Image 1 (cartoon, rainbow, N blue to C red):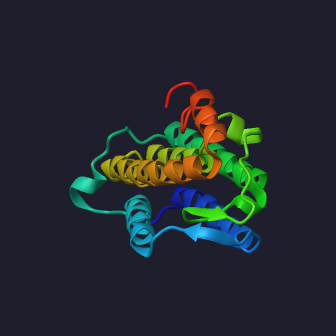
Image 2: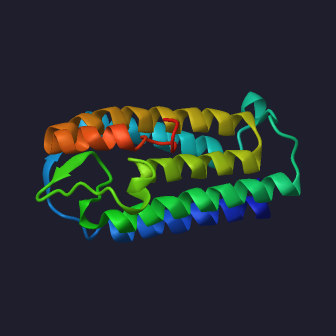
Length: 188
């Protein structure tokens, strides 16, 4: 059964994805796009992760990794909100160059300012931090598995996307890769 506190986590994700859907209407045309199979694999990983987080699974998946407490819930919710806020900032800053799948847009620009000056993939960073916050708030094994699935999905996506961006922007992008970390400032 979903508790009242769980609704706060669900509501933040719902608002985030509602914004995402509305913002997806104003993007530039794609010149090159991700293969359908690749996109489906990404979505299977992401949907599986969210199913783990939002469905109260019985048995071993409900094993508590963190002792439930109101403080832990609020810390998790705050981390989730910060992560999703960072992703939204990145989406707004990226403007017409954004896409939900791996694409190269017509007149694609290399954006290096704002959140893109902190990490090369701030939307992915924000979503990963958001799922970490959700997992902390719930404190169960299912959250840890969800984090692993989301990390796998975005690390795979980054590998493909980086190759395309190097092809598109050449030395400008390789310089950017040397200067700005991919997901975690100064680390990764």
